[in-house]
Length: 335
Image 1 (tube, rainbow, N blue to C red):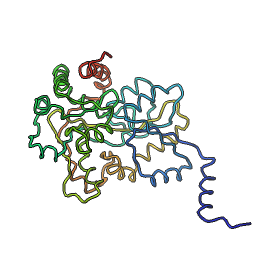
Image 2 (spheres, one colour):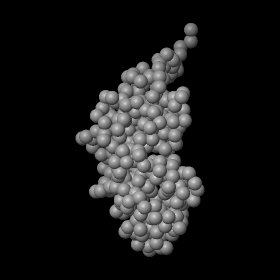
Image 3 (cartoon, one colour):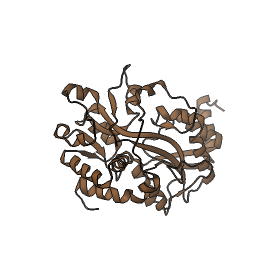
Image 4 (cartoon, helix red, strand yellow):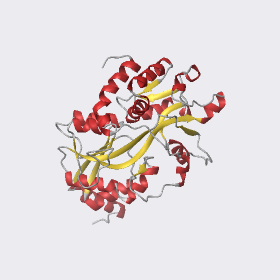
C-alpha cells in the first residue's frame, strides 16, 4: 500500500472528524469578522461545524430572520442591536440565551460589544477646499455644505437608523423631521447601507461626499489598515451635539433553531476573553467584557463624551413610525 502524505492524512482526519459533527448555523451581518483561528478552535472544542451566513446590513439580517421564521435559517444570530431588538422581539424570532446578565439597552439578547455611530469627515477634502467644519447639525443644512453628506437608509441600515434616532432624541420629533427636510433640500445622499456609504460615496474612498455617517472607531481603522505607516488618521470624528448614538450589539438564539445548546455555547464564546480581545481590531467595536486591553491604535478613536440614544422601549415603540415618516420626508414616497 502506498504511503499517504501527512498533509492529506490531516485533511482526511479533519474531514472524518466533521463528517459526523453537528452543524451550527450562525446568521450575522456583513461586518462579522471574528478571526478564523478562534472560530476553528470553537469547532474543535465543541465538535461542531460552523456555517456562518452573512446577511448584509443588520437591518437586512433581521428582515431575513422575520421572513424565514416559519423555517428558520439559523440557530443563533449575532449583530442584533438596540435599534433592531424591538423589531425582532415583536416578530417573535428570538429566544433569550438565559445565561448572561442582560444589558438594559438590549433586552432579550446577550450583549457582545458596543460602539458609537458618529459622523466622520475626510480631513484632506476639507483642507483642500478650505471649508470650516460644521459646528452644529443645523450647519449641515446651510448652502456651504450642500451635497457633502451621505447617510444610510434607516429602513435597511442600523447605523442609518441610529443616526436618525440620535437626531430625534436630541431635537424632538417635529424639529428632527424639519431638519431632515432641510437636509433633503440641501442634497443629502442616501445609501442602502454602511458599506456603500463608506466605500463608494465617501470622498476618502473616491466618492464625492466628505461627510459620512460611520463609527467613532473608523479613524482608528483607517490607520490600522493603511499600507503605509501613518502618524495621524486621514479621517476624523465630527462629534456634533445630538449626532452620536451608542450602539450595543448582541447575540440571541433563533426561535425554532435546531441546536439551542450549541448556540448557547457560541454566545458564551463571543463573550470569552479571546474573542473580546479580538473584536476591537476585527469589528471595530468596544468589548463588553471588563479589563480587556485595547490595541494602541485606539488612540485615534476619539470616544464620545456624550450621546443622544433613546431607551430601548421608546425605540421599539416608535422606530417603525419614525422610519415611515423619514421615508416620506427624505425619499418623498409613501410608506
